[in-house]
Image (cartoon, rainbow, N blue to C red; front, side, top):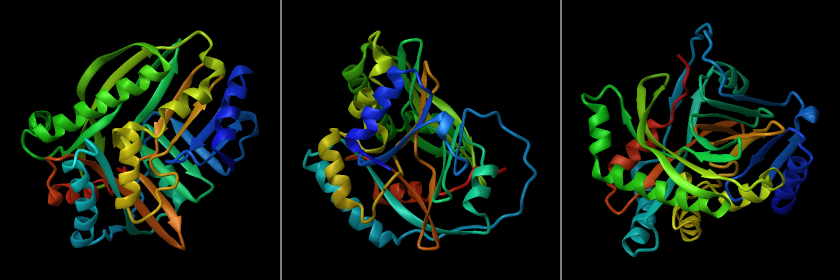
Length: 319
C-alpha cells in the first residue's frame, strides 16, 4: 500500500502516460492504492454506475447496535462547542456501529444496489451514492450530498428543502466545494442547486439533497490527476469548513479511526476520471462487522436529531 506522496506521484505518472488505473485514498491521505487496471487482481472488486440488476432476494438478517445516546452526546458536545466558538461552520461527526448479519462482505457487495461499489480484499465493502469528482472532456464536476430524510414522511421533499438547518449546511458545503474546485480549475459554477436523489434501502426509502458544481481544467490536467486529488482531499462533504481546523475537531471528537471510510476511490480510463466518496461503509474488525456513518453538525443542530440520522444511515440497499 502506498503512502502520501507516492500515491499522487503515481497518479500523475500513469495519467501522463494515459495508462488506465484504479485508485483508492484514505480519509487523511496517509495510505492508498494506485494500480493499473491491467494489473488489478480479483481481490479488489468495484462497480461504477452499474445498471440496477434483478437479483434474487436472499433472506438476510441485519441488526445494528449503535453507541449509546450518552456517548454520542459527549462527542456531539466537542463538535458543538467548537462550532459555537467559531472554530468551524460545519463539522461532519461520524460513529462506528457494530452490526450483525448473515451476509459476508462479498455477498453484501454482490447484493447491494448503489451507484458506486467497492469490495477491498473482503476487508471492507462500500456502496456509495455520492460522486466525489468526475473529469470529462476537460471539465471537473462535483456533486456534494447534504440533507437526508425518510421519504415516507408526509411532504418529505418540502420539509427537507425548507429546513433552515439543512439549507445552511448544504450552502456551506456547496461554498466549500466551489472554493476547492477553484484551486484546480477555472470558471467554477454551481449548475444545479439542491436537487433530490432517491435512495432505496433494506427497510425504507430516503431522500437526499445534492448540488452540481462544474469547473474548466487546464489542458495538461491529464498529467496532474494526482495533484488535483491532493488539493481536493479530504472531501469537503465529509469533513466540513474550514477544512483544516475541522479535521482537527473531527480527530478530537471521534473515538475511532475512519481509515478508508470517507476517503475516495475511482478510475482513470485513459482520458477521463470517475470517483466516489467512500460512505455507506462496512469494515471487518477483529471478526466483527462495523458500519461507519454520520452527518453534518452546525450550530443549529440538535443532538437527538443528529443521533437518529447517524443511526438511520446504517442500512444496506438490498431490495
